[in-house]
Structures are given as structure tokens and as C-alpha cells.
Image 1 (tube, rainbow, N blue to C red):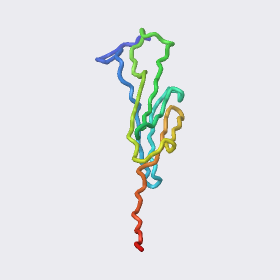
Image 2 (image 1 turned 135 degrees about the vertical axis):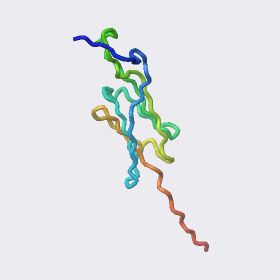
Image 3 (image 1 turned 30 degrees about the vertical axis):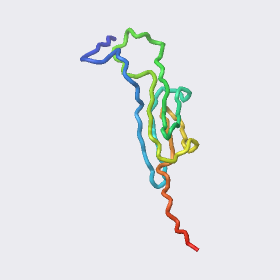
Image 4 (image 1 turned 60 degrees about the vertical axis):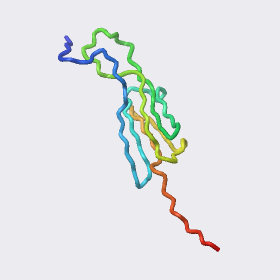
Length: 125
């Protein structure tokens, strides 16, 4: 079987790896869910950090060393370090952020906007 490259491509160039993400807000539950596609990445290679009201998902995807660089006709999968940062709603505490990994999908949940406090009328005596 002969593999042949056709057309122009950026074969061999290292492109930054930025995981795809969906962000969903459930206003009834006051919960935000960020879902990241991280196929082939072990949860040990992923870090979820909260700092200065920002959520950062970072890690590293490793290339298989089973195959050498020669012989590839197409190489589209990306490898290397990645990072994605989101601004958290005001008032979210670290212990309110939950993360789980299942079948190459990282799901991070946290509270949405802090509930507004209604003004309480104080009776003057």
C-alpha cells in the first residue's frame, strides 16, 4: 500500500494544541459546566487549577514513540502542552469547582453567578 500526500499541508509543523470546549449554563440549578475534549490523554496528565478567580485546565499530550517520523503521509493529531483558561463568576470558591474525566472528556462544574441578595429593610426604633 502506497500512501501519498496531495496538495499543500503543514505536515511536520508543530501547531499549538488547544482542546475544544463546550460551556453550558443551567440557570435553574445555578451551575456552569465546561466540557473539554481530551482524547487519548490520561487524567494524571491533566491539571485543573483555580487562581485569582480563573479556572485553568492544562496538561500534556504525548506522542506515541512506537513509530518514527519517516513514513507518515498524514499526521493531524496534535501533541504537546496545552492550556485553556476561563474567568469564573465572582464569588466562586475553590472547593465549589468539581472535575471528572470519563472516556477522554473532562467535565468541570462550578456555580454560576452568585445569587443576588435582596435588600432587607431595617426598622428604625
